[in-house]
Length: 117
Image 1: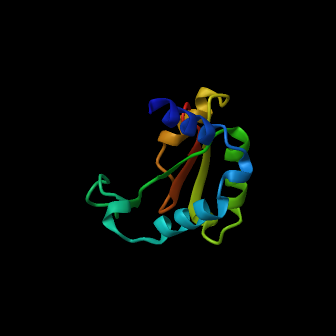
Image 2: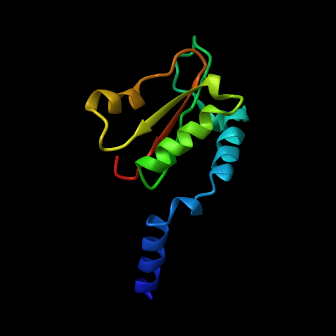
């Protein structure tokens, strides 16, 4: 029973890039970004500041898919309102640290990473 689940998980993890529905991911990111729901806002900002849009974290299987998704995100109409950040093990510690910085103004941080970053 568990061997079947492990095989499915292994197949998903090692799935070719063609199996990733980038269009669906793009639509989900846009949907979350356009929501004004407090659930998607960073309400831990000081009360004198307006709430900041919370970050979006997208997991991808590898660096190639991370680069591909970030390239596609840059083409969307709201991309100018985003800070797009890759996160994977080959980035320098300084580059990895950027994911913890607050984005400027009312921009939303979108982090595209591997599950081991």
